[in-house]
Amino acid sequence: MGLQSKHKVDAAFSMSSMTDIIFLLLIFFMLTSSFITPSGLPVNLPSSESSDIVMQEITVTVTKDLKFSVNDKIIPREQVKTELTSLLQNKKGQVVLHIDKEVPVEHLVEIGGIAAGLEANVTIATKPYK
Image (cartoon, rainbow, N blue to C red; front, top):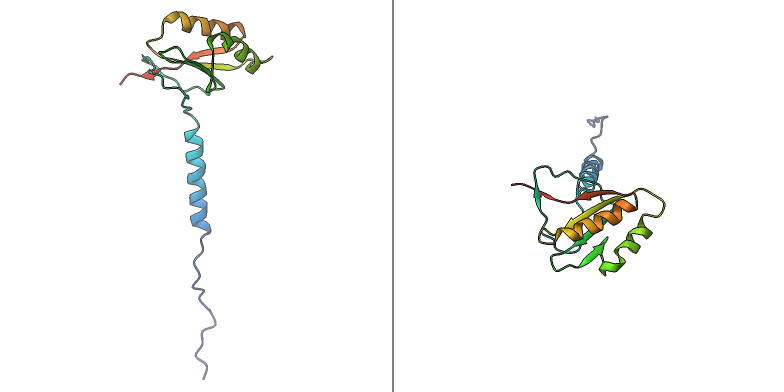
């Protein structure tokens, strides 16, 4: 008298759906975290009504004690033009200026003029009003 069932139940747990969810979450966080690129030097940005997110190819940072950096590489003021020229060789790029709000405007105009002279799109980084 054989009372065994013809349908056997497998008690194993499948992890494939869990790994799919983890993989999708990982992709989501990787994509959303790349929109904001912090600069290497601490800068107190000015406020504006509209603060758009721009993909940053090249960043130029000027701190309130007049330290200059291009793509987080600290350089003297005199070398900003040569550094931007080497980064923008024969192409139109996006230059984002991270200028501290206590820096005199002449430095903003100087760096913006250098980037515009190299046919780059110049954007000034700001923080939105609260």
